[in-house]
Length: 331
Image (cartoon, rainbow, N blue to C red; front, side, top):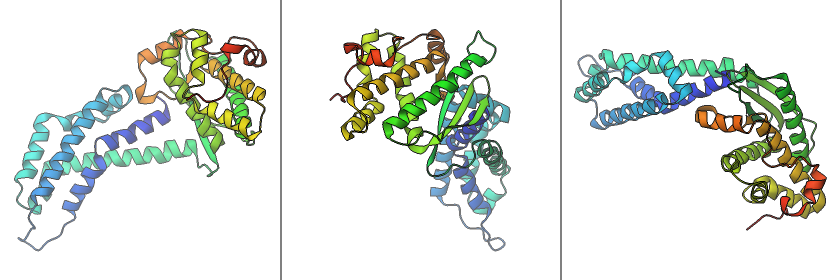
């Protein structure tokens, strides 16, 4: 499991289990002070809110338990015991029947849940500080991160040097071409981290606008990729002009006179041929919690194949008619 995948999963667990809200509520009860034998009453609204939080937490636990990464973490943390129906029912009934704050403060069940959720929050915060922040580091307002995941093919033992070298060259070319489209400098590319696990997560630091454009491009292509693998070359190329932000950005550059129409078409083809190569080496947007065997199987099936490019030079493809649709955005 990747370091950043682990910290992201922990953060998601804290959020979906409503841990912070539950701890805050119980902490408010524990912090109340009162004169001896004069404990304030526990309002019905507070009881209802607590029950709703706990039931919502249980729902989040059920959903997270079915996902590969969060499910393994939850099992390792031993949280399942706290969601046993009997134990939850006992806690809810205990709080609902409590007449005042003193009775809640004396409840062993309330203390147990409070300590469990508080330790979970502390663990997530510590991991973010020691594992995530030190790996990613601080970014300037003008900088951004492009995250790409290179899958580990089932029939290979790790990521081969050839695939990694191809990735470095391809993402560098994509960075340069997108910089030309945006009209910004292309000399700020660095590899910020390589986070290994069963797959390899790569963080590429570059200008913020380039990073946002590349992340959007890779995400949009991945959404289309699931259907593109069944289409002919002509259909794939025709769909490029619909729904991809990068095509609109190229069109804007042509309209502004930053590049000619011919240069714009060549840039478009070059960019999508590089995306082609990324898919062919199993590089995609981080799949994370959404990863399924089917998604990885799709990338494995398309290994070393070309979805978009024809293998010809960008100049030839850009001038080849139907295979290279006009960059003017479609209505």
